[in-house]
Length: 333
Image 1 (cartoon, one colour):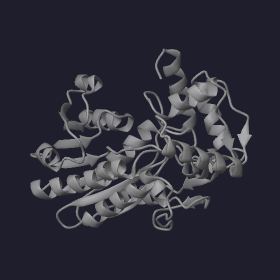
Image 2 (cartoon, helix red, strand yellow):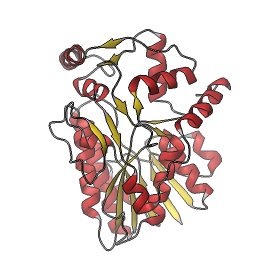
Image 3 (tube, helix red, strand yellow):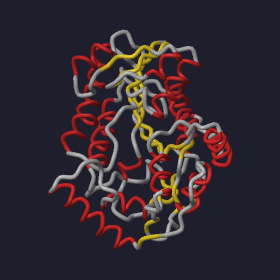
Image 4 (cartoon, one colour):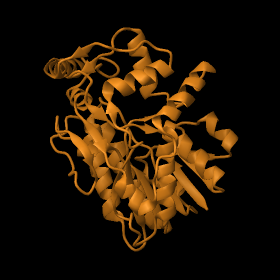
């Protein structure tokens, strides 16, 4: 089977490409740049922007399925830049599936689509937790629009499913963990609200496995078609527990200091104002949305994913930490 993966050069995207190749599929990755790490896998690469409909439609010619994983993530940036990548890009993927008669679409969403200020989510499912409102970040806003578009596109000709993996980590991560390690070593990492809020995380192999499980079950009329699912390890831990465990695995100093939520929220507002007015380069160290995320409990039930497509995490957090420690010991990440 020929499968297009958008964002195959990223952390999860690479795991998806690798797993699909191992399962005997012919894989093409659609990226903005060229990624040498995909070459040993035999993955053909097509360079293009998600917002370029003509290039996207051409890239999907001859494909049997699409894993739409690419997105503009982060806590800062213009709304238009997020809209073009996440909304227009997803609309282009759906249009490409329609034009070429592609029958299966697996979309990588995010739990952020249900974010509601400091409202905790404890053991909820996509069936019980509503979409968020009043987002203070264009990422959450645009991913919500995109997820709704994917689910609305599900019909007798295109089976679509949306997965919401929570905080993916593991060997090869070039985003989340390097930032934590850098800030911890510089003494600039703090918990918000004490770090006692429970959160879910997802080991990279489990995040990829959930996509493969959903894909295997996906078909018009299937139990998972037209639905969204939270994905994680199903092992909620406090922010303090999981962050310090990751730092230990990376050989970085643990964190014990904390900021009250009100202080963190105020700092986030000030940073947003400065980065908007001046403007300053890069992302602010803290935003209001990030402060809310860091201080709030977010953990989910895997029961719907298990029920509808058999997802059961295969790598525990303890085992994942062992693998991560070994990776850093070898000089990797």
